[in-house]
Image (cartoon, rainbow, N blue to C red; front, side, top):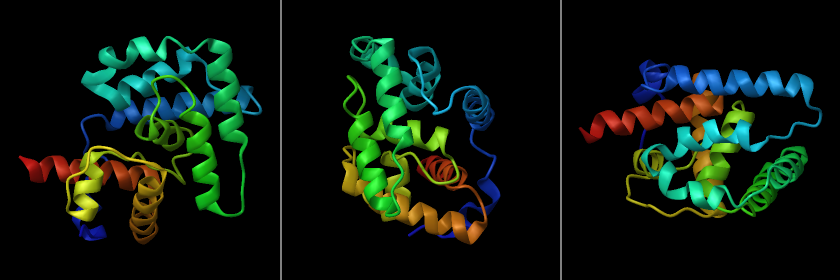
Length: 178
């Protein structure tokens, strides 16, 4: 299993680190003008492209089925959920976000990770493989909560935001795959 020392030097090493920081900065700016925070299609498309990469064009038709009002309503609902039990909060937020066409748990996790990087991460096959040393391509909410627990532990040990620890784990897997 991956250890904090395995990723300590990879915090800013991912090729898309600067793009990730730009998206997070854009969302922070939206927080200042939208309270409670909600995201429109225009706000979400950079997140979708960032997460889906080459798969974006394949999923775009499903994403276009959502109206801007749906994106606004759903993201506002998800991002205002606050529970003292973080696992319940994650479960509820993912459930709300995945009600959007074209948004499964991995994409919903990307929305959460980029809107609240201190607390959330993105689940995908690379992170899962690096953390659990097994292949997996489909993810549900219990898998996300298990993965998030591991990434939060790494982030705490490193003193980093959860999303940054996750991106370093992603980079670690990419480098070890080659």
